[in-house]
Length: 113
Image (cartoon, rainbow, N blue to C red; front, top):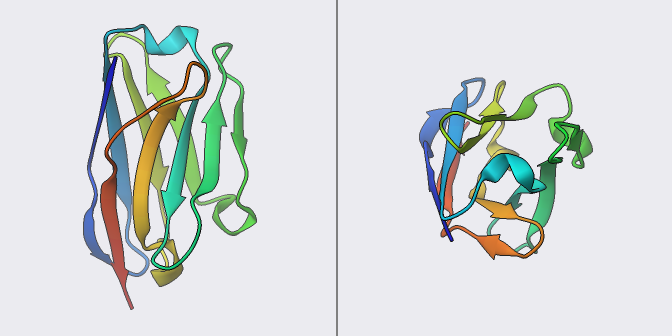
């Protein structure tokens, strides 16, 4: 099982990024998947989930309406579309399979004001 995130970087406030998480060793669409993030000096927080049935949930109020979780079954890839980015979105973003738990190494997202 391997999860590899990509798409992070440095962008100005108001910009957009799309994070990708390529899965291997399992079929992503048959599991509940998630994006977490960890900002400097803060605990890791759950940002969004997508169930095997395709139901999506955003858990962080400050990103509702700006972030969208999705997946491409053909590419076995999970996405997090992030729009109208704010400096407080700066964090390392991790994708993961909820159970059995497996997490990627993370991708850094930095938003400049």
